Length: 86
Picture 1: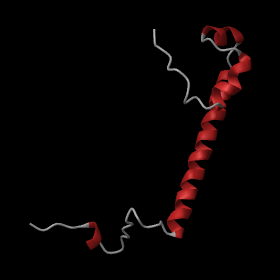
Picture 2 (picture 1 turned 60 degrees about the horizontal axis):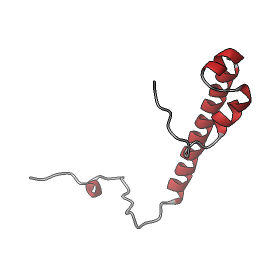
Picture 3 (picture 1 turned 180 degrees about the vertical axis):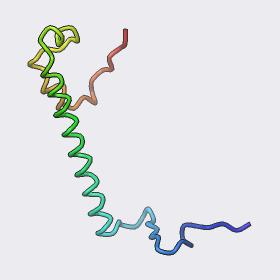
């Protein structure tokens, strides 16, 4: 039984884990990271605008004060305890 291996495919570069990525790959990675960062920033702005549009009573109902909006959206929340659902 024969199979096609990645090394057999013409035009495909195989990067071994020990090899450093090419300059082109480094550029592609940098562009992908920049696009991801821009998308994250867009989603944060959208969330901030949506929360800012709520009235104070609605914010109070969800346990948020208007002064906390920026920190809720832009702060690193990796150390925050998970919220239990009711």
